[in-house]
Length: 104
Image (cartoon, rainbow, N blue to C red; front, top):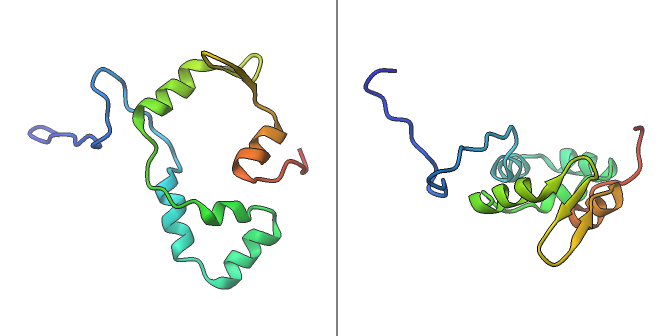
């Protein structure tokens, strides 16, 4: 590693640690673009059709930190300046269009 410089994304915020994720919006978008029609039909039939419409590559770095800083995992709430949003399966369904029923 000596002599190598680690590249940071353009939206990296100085003074904040980098957030590592397994599946970025860009990866979802790239995966959807190479899916066959049959694969897309399968995704829709399982109730995850809304994921086929994600067409963003990144989320702003500060937004990620803001969400993490304001989320209370004990109460499953996002505590904002002017409101509190309780995160439930219905909230996730309303925002992302993901199924709110299942085998859990």
